[in-house]
Image (cartoon, rainbow, N blue to C red):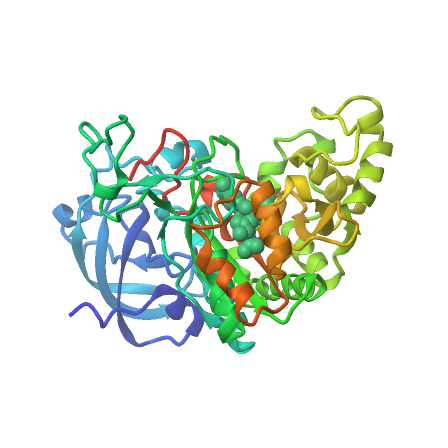
Length: 479
Ligand code: 4AD
Ligand code: MG
């Protein structure tokens, strides 16, 4: 019987003494043949297990090593030692799984995140990753809660598609063909008619187009699933496989879109503060230590908790792309040519250095930029009356840069078709998308939030590879 086990979080939370329980977990440390620090993943706090000297034979004691899995029954008693209120006085100890202390890669000391990334199959056993993944779970739960409470329908958009939602061409092909010997046409090109789906397919880059179809009937929907981008970006903010939340709302415009996105981000952060305080406190302390390695001027002005509270208590700054360009142009960084990409004219795409300048140096809070030039945005965004810009919005967060990308969608069939032609988006393949504009079209809007970037923001972690269990990035698909 394994389900009789009590979780350590529950045990430490109750403080009721003099009753017998069973716990199971992994040894973090074992001191003086007497004190085991046991962790079961329910919290970073370990339960102290006390072995009475002489009660257990040497052969068993030798097997209590860092990393070993144990089942322990005994009595919860008040602790005499410092550091804990209660401890478990062991009556029986069973080794469920040995761990060779010489070979176990996680020693009871601090390991670098880079090293832990190489042993991602074991890094769950550290406090940092325990906290990160408990928070990741909690945020996923909060996302469903938020939309469910608002009457949204959770839509499962397909993982395999034949369309490129963003029109950016950064896709992983999906095929069942023998790559060594694919079916060919007479002219030597690949004959996809013979492939599994009878046409070229890829892993989805976004569930948006499908979400739009559903929103045109169900009203408010959201997707929350993995998306894939074959962009060769080796940065601390890009993954080849990342999770995205994409709400899509019928009868909504850009302002509604911004309002719900801001409310959503604040809700999620507050949820974490209310439900994951111990893990956040741990990560806040970790961040303070990490920041000590940095030069003074690069350290954040606020601690993690303070930053999260600041974000929920202040309005995001809203401004147009055009206003942002003016600010950037006038900045000393631009004038002294300190930006890698100088801002010389209206129309240029903003790089992460510019986004971070606006958020971290200029406004010192999250920023929503709207009305971008149509040339640097996707075909489906609604064109503004100026003929130059589209009703797009990006939310930029301190330390992260772009966290949300969204827009009001082009609901006017003629305008959409014209734009697709200009951008060489194949209208015949997207007939189903255009159909929604033919039969009861309606103003609608939506956005995509990168789940891992949100987790980075909430946890204060700095590399996106450390907030997803098994990161996929160029030249890496280990585990
Ligand atoms: O700005 P993006 O490309 O927008 C879309 O995909 C739209 N279809 C969303 C919509 O309107 N429904 O991506 C949205 C967000 C970005 O703001 C970023 O947070 C995240 O997805 N993102 C990535 N996260 C990790 N790794 C990558 N390679 C990412 N690319 C985008
Ligand atoms: Mg974007």
